[in-house]
Image (cartoon, rainbow, N blue to C red):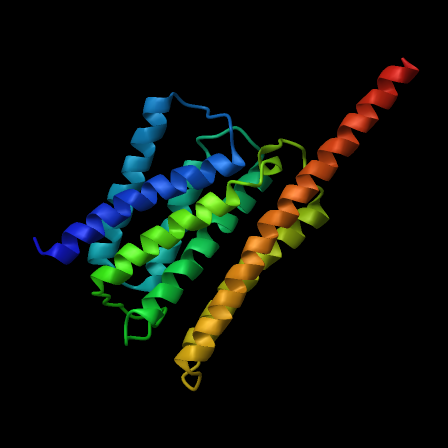
Length: 223
């Protein structure tokens, strides 16, 4: 086994930990025992590693990741709408970080529909470190864990950002006449917008909880 393969496997195991930390930004209560929860993340690591090894097509890997993220989200207490927001809000910032560093450390330009061979050991390590830094930054938003119901219009607005990111990524990489520098600038801007979504979600959760508590207090007064 070559050094790249060892770094790649260890990097995927590390990413399972990063995703675990990300999920705990959104959820504080697990439906399962801690041991089962950890086994589930090991299962994610094994599944996504096999997918990367045998199916190197970015679109297939993206779909596999989203499916596995949804399965992990069902380990936790919360509404289906929150699970959708959590999965998309976690995956697309990580995808933007990975794509940006892949472009910075490789001369290859990924095609969403074609196998992509990436061989930079430094790039693998940089992607993992940047992903951890990302989750550490977002950990500062404490209100995201709130279990308050989100109105459909706000939910759709929050979901529009990661979905727009997906459309942008496909548009960029399917366009042949766009420079690598412009692609990287677009990816960094998209990452900033996705991070802003965490802030908006955090403030929205805090506001909705305050309104709910205020309503309960008024009901208790009239009783």
